[in-house]
Image (tube, rainbow, N blue to C red; front, side, top):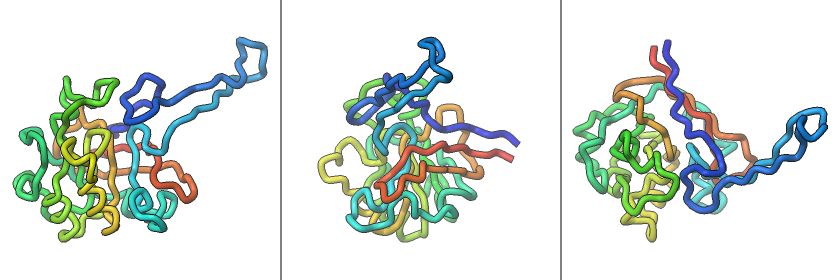
Length: 211
């Protein structure tokens, strides 16, 4: 068994959408305290994270009520590294999406020089388009993930079309999956977002198990 950790490390200088994480030292052995204690201030959508339906639909399922069977189970990593801009339904089919309930999209975002490795948001990145979102809904996809800050293409961050399609339909979104060193293929996904009661999303330790 081989375990691939696809979680982005969280730290103050990481890639971020809005505010960077902040760390406060509350106690330290060096200062004479009995132990080291820190307080972290960070958003629910920091690093590798899950978007719950409540992110875009008031009163919808929050992150702590997402079915764990959606977040844990067989998954496929698809090779979308040949796509520029927006991923379509045809791209998904060509890459082998059919028959899978948990799909992670490996794009040029997580290439060795891709924007997921930067500390500031890129002006452009590869994202999912509406036709791919509709295909996922129609074919029973439970979780759709991508290797950047948002599953939305950079051209749609004013309208958020894909979020508005997927989340009301109950398709869970995983963002910022670090897929640089993961080969396309079938795995077992274990994605465990922090159990923040009533939250719109949560940062998630996420691994792919290769057996």
